[in-house]
Length: 518
Image (cartoon, rainbow, N blue to C red; front, top):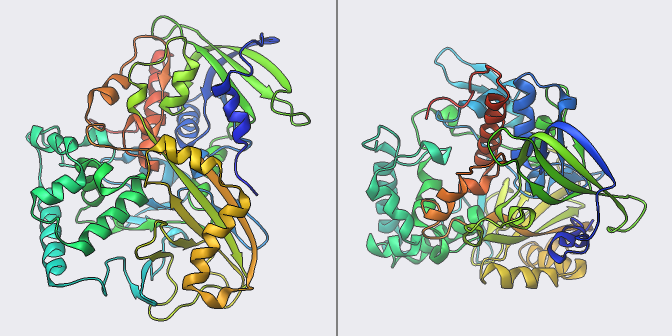
């Protein structure tokens, strides 16, 4: 397999279909453009609010729904094509709890009020290991490359995180929360967004500890496709602090062989299922002039039997229109691109699934769910089917964020990576740290994500561009994780539900919010 059909998506960029006229007009109560986690969450919430499945149409350029959270697989195992886990929801996110309970992942609460998870979804130990100089050690904190200065720095960094986790702002909110909207607006906290995480480390006297710098740089690449120098200090600290609390049932990592592909499958199937049409490229959006007014969308439905320019253009007249697409796509769909669009930048990634005759071994710590190579530009690999029979074939998913260059340059380089080059990149590292796997590779599948996730660069999360993107005066509703500035499933879900609840309000439906109070 070789990922999505980028040539089809680029028809929008290149204007190859710009001159086509609609061949038919179809009226729909609600049209959702985009079938990633936000679009699917929006459709699910609308069904939960009483709309019939046939009243909500979801279209997407991909053949299958899920966006960067989708999964794939073969005869050995399912696997993730992007995001591979979900952390238990924070107390500020009751809507996500509602979904997880509805689909059976959250079984309820015990006598102490703690969340009771379906144990099949909880990531088993060992969760992480790190390869350094030929040896595997448990956890991701470097051991062999750490000196006394690093030990002091890690201790000081941990103390700062503890203080931030305990802090309540003047507005009564936690300093860092999920959803981002629930975070404190104290000025000194928001000012952290103006610094890079590298600058913050220097300011706090922690910049001279190489092991700490590597660990945090790895976290930035893993979470945001950025480096220490290109990650907002607020975003970097948010990752470590937002989930801190006293309830251990909220510390769990939920994961499946196909990663968050399981979540999007459950979302798509819940409450009667999602009315979804794939290989459907939206070419233009014409929102109504005022909130609640009818809107128009022109969608190109590709003919599966022909090339990307074979198909038909359909004009949809929608009572309610939701654009669950990233900002760079929205800029190409509207008559006038949003002036804030250029501030939204996206990290490109390469994801490679390698099917092996046997699981990877190694000297030191045993095989973990997440296996990281110290000093590598990659993020290492996760094991899709670690719970399979001992010694049986397995699939490992290898991740490479292209974080060294500016996104546009990195995207051009990624577009030049063909399947053979992707195989060389993934196997070059995998066989270096696991030489006994040579000759034990069954197959290699790869996916190029040109715009995998929004980058929370300094000044973006609490800057004017994101604030402007949250306000529209016309009928169009938007829903995407990039509106939160933090590219995680929780934020995508929140934005989708938020848009759906506004549709319900505009439609005059009396349905209480599941998102809780702000």
